Amino acid sequence: MPKLTIEQLDLAGKRVFIRADLNVPLAGGEVADDTRLRAVVPTIQYALKAGAAVVLASHLGRPQGKVAREYSLRPVVDRLEALLGQRVELVPDCVGPETLARARSLKPGETLLLENLRFHPEEEANDDGFARELAALADCYVDDAFAAAHRTHASIVAITRYVQPAAAGLLMQQELSALGRILQSPERPLVAILGGAKVSDKLALVEHLLGRVDALLVGGGMAFTFLLALGHAVGRSLVEADCVETARAALNAARRRGVRLVVPLDTVVAASVDSASGRAVGIREIPPDQMGLDIGPRTCETFAAMMRTAQTVVWNGPMGVFEKTPFAAGTLGVARAVAEAPAFSVVGGGDTIAALAEAGVTERIGYVSTAGGAFLEFLEGRRLPGVEALTEAPV
Ligand code: AMP
Image 1: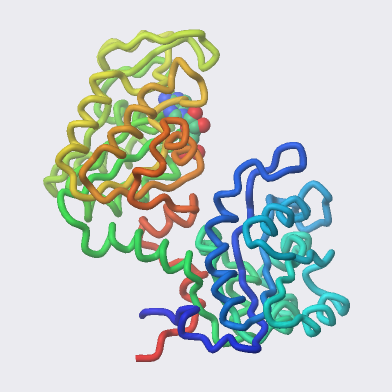
Image 2: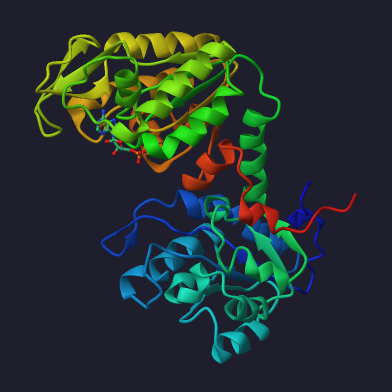
């Protein structure tokens, strides 16, 4: 069912609770990357222009339900003020009588930022009483935190029982529409590229994608479990032994469905991730005492060739230990190939986005998602609690 959107709300003179994902990386007490802040600014500005007062809320990091200075949203305030070009007031607690009084005295055009929601254990417990307190701060609710939409937390799910209507913000809509394009009516061929370390995190996604894509390209540490399932000796490469059977089943399912599941033909091996250099070898030539830490040049070229004919591309997960220069070439090569593809491309996940930036190609990607976990769960075909909780659009 389509969900209500912020554009369908009458915001004039109202207080709107905007649940954002301001969970940005910090370094030395400052915002190290403001991508997520910039992404939510249009929604805040839209609400302010429409005559609303904004009560903005987010989590930051994992403070484990306790107040911890290092997880304060304070560093976000300066950056947000600069982006919005106006004052943002931070209140020291997201609930309580003082916050309620301040929210009630807010005037149209003003923005109040609540301190980290996760300072209260009730947030992650999806607690009803806590949600009711948050709901009391506003007249209507907007969820713009797609990156947290896979979480059943109080400010995302329980709150919508107490403040209605609950609408999707502009970023939430953009994310759903870009990712929806992959699953619903992609232009074909549709090619997915998966990488990263943990194959156990990605097997459900592999299974779901096999029913949708024309080709699935697997790189990164996760590829070695597939290579093992195909009978290759992988030396000391990363493998998850308990996933070999599922990987084998996925390879068989791909064959039955006529989907090309492409695993690496060559890999860059070294004694450890700390080795100063690596050596490309064919996949049958991995020495028993070495580990594969990147896809090799032939694999990179094969993946790139498939990009050239794809009409839709989705990518998550690095092709190797790209944080280390000797093992970064595969990931950077795939980043360039995705950018050069004539296809509509969607890329998600923190590491993958960092790789796009490092390759200098971010601007050439069709859509860069702000989400990691929610991106994967959406592509797995799972219903996201944060989206489910929103009010249905009138027919
Ligand atoms: P994930 O969190 O599962 O998406 O994995 C991301 C991590 O996978 C990155 O930090 C990479 O360094 C790591 N990675 C990618 N390829 C390999 C590999 N061949 N061996 C070990 N780690 C890898």
